[in-house]
Length: 316
Image 1 (tube, rainbow, N blue to C red):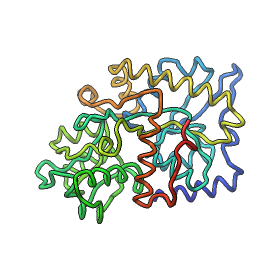
Image 2 (image 1 turned 135 degrees about the vertical axis):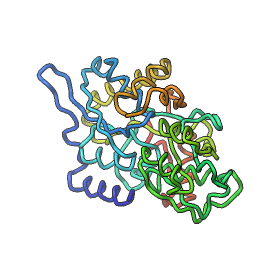
Image 3 (image 1 turned 180 degrees about the horizontal axis):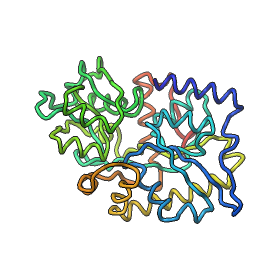
């Protein structure tokens, strides 16, 4: 599915002469209206919090957040000009760039906590599952939100770290909100889940067998905010103001975790007690380039890209 999406993005890119030609509109008051594609999970709490606190308004930006299902879906949205900016994981961005789709990150999105067993996501199995280690995942069905993306890439890293070869794993696409029920009902043998659905699954009895982001790279930069090179070239001031606002939002969320938890009720249906229990991602202002290069190298090893990729071409 991801390949089809990216193929569509490439077609759109060609047919619309790099697309994104109308990335923002200006109201009578000089405020630019922009759409930002973002998956409705805890990772993007700073974006919603920044809108609520007026950080984008300070930059004369009126933001409409449009929900996506993941980075693979956000890429064609940015390429077509549906979104001016989007939140997406680094694997989606590297795959797109390796296919000559000129996207570029403008800011950090979120990062792993770097702590085994205390990250904002992980691989879970049903409460009575015989699976106790990522080494037992080969031959099993594992849910991810998008196939051939950061979920399966980092799951394979966990399998390797546990001492097994990541072969014959049956990855199944499911939206994150559907994963706790899929695990409880044993529709899949395991699932990679992020917060707040990670806490929902654990509260239903799911067992955590690995922290796949931590296994993949120390302090992994998981996602970034990105746009097209056309926007960067023709609307540099807009990109600068967006970057300023989102970086202020990241810092505010990092410094005010209770407000980051509270804003979840604005764009998810998560109960307040779940929001209070969940583990928040790290929201640094700087991308950990070394960790992203590690992901790119894993993608080459797993066949997601065909040639070694220098991440400096796609990062801020």
